[in-house]
Picture 1: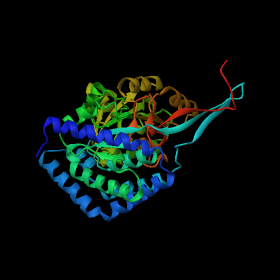
Picture 2: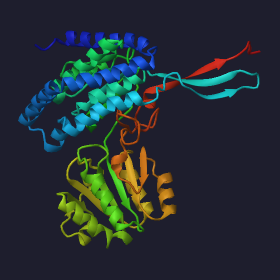
Picture 3: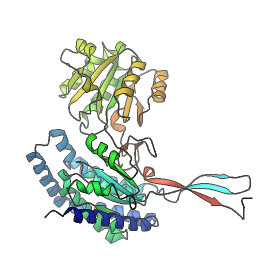
Picture 4: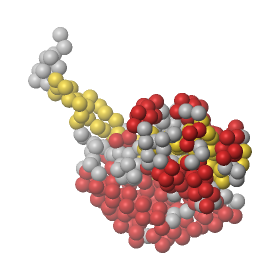
Length: 423
């Protein structure tokens, strides 16, 4: 039975209030208690694996019935690889240093007063996300280790798996001394629950949306609470004139094919005109062999006869599918102009043997992750040594790029004196 609008509002407000109360205790928990919860959560999830995967199968069956497409189904499914990463993420976060209480940047003023900055939790973090049920575990792991309470609101398409996962995380909290209300999940699929959550600025300190453009736009426009966006991943690979064709091919294939339905997947490849004759046909052949469709500019289509002519909308598209936009450019300036115009501030990579060009690309491209001679798939908290990640922030305020433990903390000033007065 669906709750009335008043009952729905009361449920979300009460959940937020309890999460806020729990956050006061969370900030005082020892590292040992938080790590015990992480390790116990991993144990409980492993023991409950069959039931969780059955819940995920029910979500998948309903999604297919509702006409959800292949790439989105891939995001929704808890595959064996995702399961391993999810469990490993809990244990990896337990092994990470606890940032809470760490004092940074201490200076001594002329009067002898010591001024430092100490890392503290943000408080209560609301995570609004779509499709991927593994976010339930990854988000909770990072928020708790960083001393925060978390309110999880996953998409309706993953409700059964999300609730099953959250049940085990909350049970592990009861067993290890972590406040159970610090891991909260909104058990409703009604989108009105999001509307209510976005008004709870008295209890919630930060909102992080992860999903499609519609969700991001709704949250940023309606929230009374500060928002860090985890927006679309229109990621670019620039093949410079000096690029080694073999390296460029391997990087392009890995960036596009390894995981197509994720935000760090390659969506547009820019090819320097002087690399066009040798590198582009080789890369295109490798991509075609793996079932990738190329939508190219006029010069691309002249070199790659199988390419489909691109239209303007292709340059800003996050396909999350076996489709790649390809454009031939005259120089790095044109490549960077293209990225600035059509990119989403996510991840951009140059393939080059020219050191000067590599450094110029790193300096001039302002996206949250910029690389040289590597796959775009490295724009991932797990791959960058952060343990699990809350997502990839495309907001420059507070935190930018893959968001791990430190991104879920802030700094307060601490003063140490021996009687100093302001006179």
